[in-house]
Amino acid sequence: MAKKKGAKYECGECGLVVIVDEPCGCGACELICCEVPMKEVKPKTKK
Image: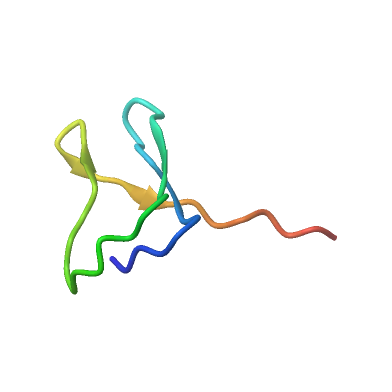
């Protein structure tokens, strides 16, 4: 999971949303909430 500034992640269990303010720079890491990995929220596209 590559984190970059402004990336948004959401917990599928409780709905917690995290926005990356300062990326960690490590190669492999995950954000964990409710004992499951958080999923990146893609920006909504305008039609």
